[in-house]
Amino acid sequence: MENLENSTDCKETVSPLNNSGSLLNRTVSRSDGEAMGFVLVHAGAGYHSESKAKEYKHVCKRACQRAVDRLRAGGMALEAVTAALIELEDSPFTNAGTGSNLNLSGEIECDASIMDGKSLNYGAVGALSGIKNPVLVARRLLSETQKGKLSAGRIPPCFLVGKGAEQWAISHGIPACPTEKMTTKFSLSGYKRNKRKMELAEQVETKRKRQSCEHENDFGCLEPVGDFMVEGEENNSACLDTVGAVVVDREGNVAAAVSSGGLAMKHPGRVGQAAHYGCGCWAENARDISLYSTAVSTSGSGEHLIRTMLARECSTAMQAENAHQALLEAMQNKFISSPFLAGEDCVLGGVIVLRCCTCGEAQRSEDIQALLVEFLWSHTTESMCVGYMSAQDSKARTHISRLPPGAVAGQSLAIEGGVCRLGTMSD
Image 1 (cartoon, rainbow, N blue to C red):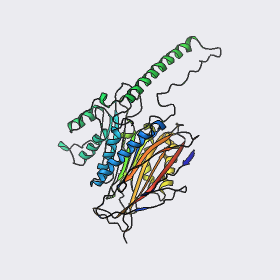
Image 2: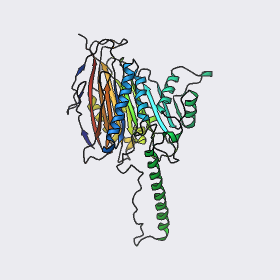
Image 3: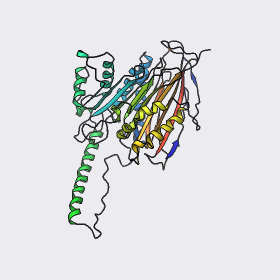
Image 4: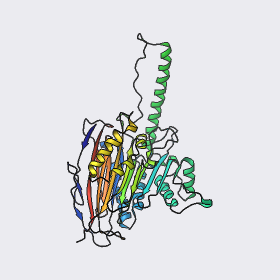
């Protein structure tokens, strides 16, 4: 498989990875009490048209700003990552929350999950209808698990699906929102086009079956009929725009979250990687000073990401010395060439990854002295839209990463990223 490496033009608080994968550093100083933290978001790995690039970048900027606002207000990583996801879900341009793809029945069913690196708790919902922000339900599930057992010693749920998830959300004060209010003109028109194509495909298939009995050609074979493709799949990766975010706060805690409306015209009840443990997101604080804290959020073909547990695989890989090389090898060996996907010739997915460690003689108190944050994104899809921002930055930076011309989506990969040093080094 071909590996395609790119580098970003990052300035000020962030420096790019050079072509060898080594890190170029800058230091951002802060005065005592000033907020610290960093957020990296994505608006999906799939295909982002040039005509809508501005909108995708804008929503990533807003999501970064919402997360940083929480960090500056003293919020922890879990609060900040939730704020970023709400902004991403509320955008009509993303396939999460408002504007999600419609399933075969014309309904919206969303998946989402969130993980706290400090407690290692996780919350998720699958095939959830009737709730505007699925991440809020996942977040509440996570919070409820921290309160201990329910009456009669019952273990509280961390993952709910379908009608049960909707009922649980409403009973815990999360307001209902009917599908029609979450459906946009774009998602509805896409559904109608896809439905017409499916009806046409079924008619063609019926005709082919009849011809197989009555009108075989001279060679006893059927005449070929063009393949049916769901709207947006002509480039194999157009509709895989799951959203997600990873955050580190002033104490070095990490958190990750992911949300998705799933595949267009999916079967009702289908649950994608965004809800599955270790597949949609992963966050884990370092348990030892020799280890890194890591946070990962994924996007792409849910079935591919589930079968490879890509989020956790990437997190594990980030303990290697060279983050860039480690992610490259993880995407190649654990995803594109994974034995669990041996029968697939087009493996579609993308990840954003953050790892951090304390610098110098930093103390693990309420505010640590300095953080070294390395952040990366990689994808096998045609493009991936990302945004990032530190609590010291005046504005977020955004980028649409693309495979070079001629590269084959699902068989090649791109990888980019940078490093950000936050805080002050001790003497």
